[in-house]
Amino acid sequence: MTQPLSERKEKILTVLKRYPEGVGFNEFCRQVKGFAAGQTVKNELDELIRLDLVGKQASRKGQKVFYFYNDETAKSISEELKSLSHLLEGLKSDISQIEEKMGKPLSAITREDAGHPALLMLIRHIDSIAHIALIISLVEWRYPAKLRDRFKVIEQPFEELVENFSRVIQLNSKLLKEYCDYVRRVKNTGSKGGTRSAFWQNR
Image 1 (cartoon, rainbow, N blue to C red):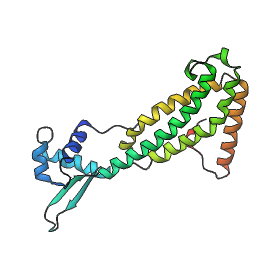
Image 2 (cartoon, helix red, strand yellow; image 1 turned 90 degrees about the horizontal axis):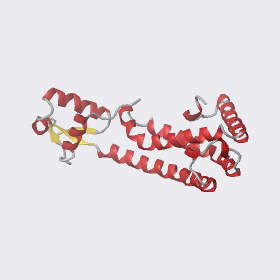
Image 3 (cartoon, rainbow, N blue to C red; image 1 turned 60 degrees about the vertical axis):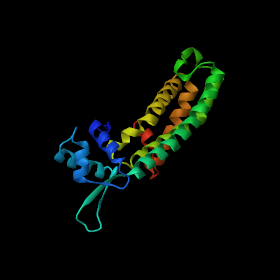
């Protein structure tokens, strides 16, 4: 499990945002002396540079180094989250149509509802779920581990949907057969050199 940025790192980024043109190390240390000593600041800045959240640039004369907030990374993550959110909302909208026909959410469906014809519509969404799982996985791995925590806002609702989907699948024998057949086809494709989503690795 990845860890979010520490409170100190978040404070350092907040201070850096006040200097769009960059700030020298000594001046920056004066601004953050209330919560971090010089060497600690240096270590934290080095880590944030490694995460591509902070940039470092020498002055024209090369005698002074300026640090600045790298908003390109933050902007990139924001855009990725927006795209993933759009995909997830589309899937949730499709699932909600099934829930309307059922008269209850997936999370409330029991074995008594297993024979409802609307449940068979779930088969159509197996591809969508696998597709979104693959995209989330590929997008997250573009970023350092400590930044992947920011994708929890997408991961958590998606995982909840998948858990409910999987539980309902188990209630209907026809659905379960369709699901198993699909997974078998995907795994066979993967064994022949195709690309497999991480979503299916342990299924």
